[in-house]
Image 1: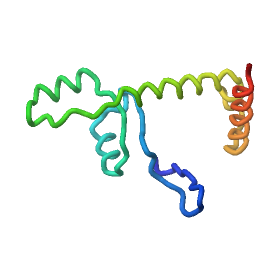
Image 2 (image 1 turned 120 degrees about the vertical axis):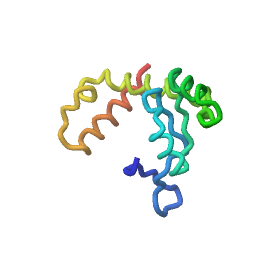
Image 3 (image 1 turned 90 degrees about the horizontal axis):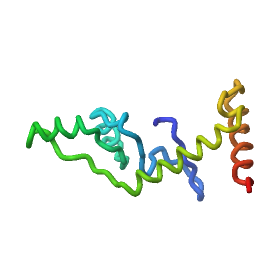
Image 4 (image 1 turned 60 degrees about the horizontal axis):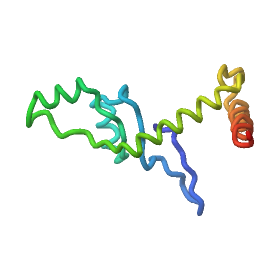
Length: 118
């Protein structure tokens, strides 16, 4: 998360905090949620049934339920499908390239091919 940099259109320092973060149930730990709250990052992470049951079993000491927006979570599926489509390119899937900038170019070419596909 510390390496995220989003450039600004008008110049200035790049943003280091995303608007929203989406994750699956594997990232639903208290530690992850605490980290995101501390950095004031909105997150959409579903709560597993066992965590929900444990929280409800504890009653008022269990804390509040995790906020969850289904419409934002559905957008995750689009991103995952796009990544899987990019992985149809063998060089992207296996990452033959040793250097990061060359791999970035490989992903860019695969993205353009995906975009131009009929």
